[in-house]
Image (cartoon, rainbow, N blue to C red; front, top):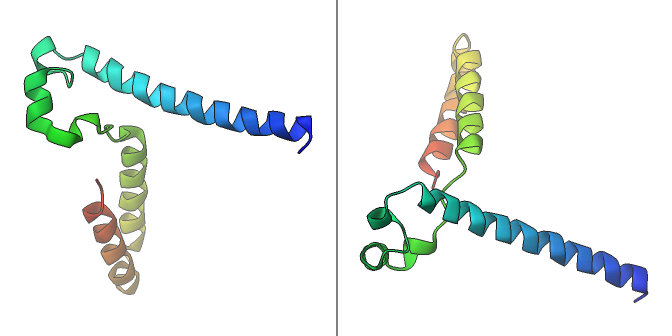
Length: 99
């Protein structure tokens, strides 16, 4: 492996590490907006949440976009009954599978 290739690999690992650090920081920011007794670092909250206390919250921007796209899809298929029969189960399954 040449030095250029090894530097490229290092950049990939570094960018991944930065993404992980940003996710962790975002989780801390979410906790800072809560009262001290409601934060995930509180021992009582940790005990109640169990192993799920490290779970990251879903990104609402993506969920909002998915909802809008699915709403538009259903609205476009309303004039065509045969298309709504195909689209509605897909949209319903997507909603059920949301975390």
